[in-house]
Image 1 (cartoon, rainbow, N blue to C red):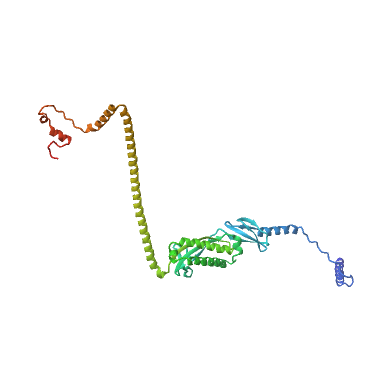
Image 2 (image 1 turned 120 degrees about the vertical axis):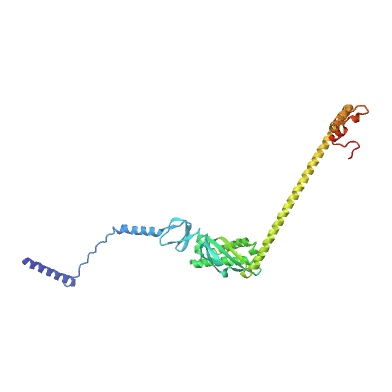
Length: 356
């Protein structure tokens, strides 16, 4: 029991000393507190790990197939990244991905409402109506196809907002095609100048976009429908029918002319060839006959009788096959005994004194 009181008194005494020390009355200012030393062992490994994770998360990026990445370093273009895994400096670099292989399409004069099948469209007459060089109106539905050729110029020089960027390209292309159509007559645009108009429009649109350094590459300019205004379509249909009939008749006339000329040329070639052959044959016969006469002349000088006999025999060889031989005696009744009538009939000749 005495021990309990002693411990209680000791605790009270101790509390009084702490109060005096706190008040600074008896013990003076309190001693400085001891600061615990902070252990840097864990932070020594944690900080590099956090930095490495940040670099890995924001530093590596993937450029998809068919695209390229434009790298901006502190706001300036520092390079272009190809498709695949690439690295950039976190916080410092910014990468903009541009699809350089995708072909984008603008429709003028109409819009595709549903791909179908069957496809449905809506007309935009304010885009399709154009003025030709002879002050006539033509309606053209056409398509512009393009892609990002230079990714740096495409990102830097075109508006960032997609709607503004597309509007800029559409306006440049439409105004250029109107210039091309305004330099041609209506009949030419409807018939013979379609391909030329498309080619010229593509070239001029590309030149204007290159001048503006947009980085856009024009793939194609294609006319879908080229028609006169509806009010005069019937008259133009008749004109086209007459033009087609005229072309058909011209083709038929050319075909007939070619046939006649070919036949005449063939006949002329045949006559010329026959004449050449006859000429060659007559010259050859004349030359052969002249050579034979020259040889006979030389032989006749040496032995005239032999040459004459040979000539006589050659003549007889030609004459004898045509002769009919009659053998009679010197009697007075020989003609009566021979059946001359039958002989002449078999020979195909008329009997003496008979009718022709």
